[in-house]
Image (cartoon, rainbow, N blue to C red):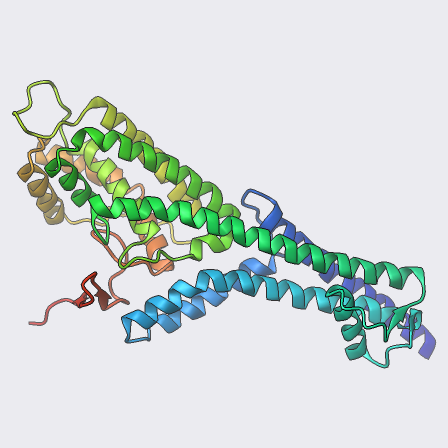
Length: 388
């Protein structure tokens, strides 16, 4: 009876260990090797990163120091990669430890307990090979060899993965920092159009929208395929890839709904809105909206349909654009079109901005958790409403 129970327990141990190893290897394959977003309820790394982010964000909201808050949030992206690696290593050690413990009669000397089997699994997986425990039969030898191969392969994959994430992060941030020169920090779509008109670069708006169409397509591809990349925070004050995307979407929406296209009779010296600029604005808005929608769906964020802008704010934006020389469509007509266009993405971009605690900008993000933000001059500007 005791022998039968021992055999049954060993079989159960082997099955559980094999299941753990298989689930982890599938998770590693889907997270690192597969170059596309993948779903799966058994992906422990996905849940680990998400719940660690909740804790990190909760702690950051309770820090009074702006620098410490930004440092904590900014360190989470690289930390999440290490957390994933640690999670996989621990689970693989547990799985191989259970497998080898089920085969303890095939190891010399026989491990006295599960702790020793875990130790043998670790020496095999990290290819240390002290030689104090040796597999003596084919099944145990195969498991120990697989453990060594898994350890070497996983560390090599994670190093390659971190390099790919870093390269994608740098490409993303080049566009974000470049946009700051025209859109400000935090970025604003109104400021972008304003700056290009004042600088006489209104003819280059088409190129801006073309670049950001490509940028949105790359972010859509990389940030869903490589989950930790979305948690890598922009390194410059008040900049964020989320706010920059929202600013370009707002600028494109204003171009399509509020600004009149050049008909050849513009006033001398006034900014020109060409058909080419409108065309690229439409394409950039389409790809950017696709990117925003997929991010909301993948991270299971609230899909809110809200314009997020009051009529008075829209009127102030119109006044700024008219002041720099743009010709505008009638106010009521433009507001109805802008409200319809912006309601398609504004609630979603705000959900994304709140989830990733990005610096709030014009019409984008949640200002309530971040009462103060650092300016480029080192001073603090309050986000709290004035008293009285």
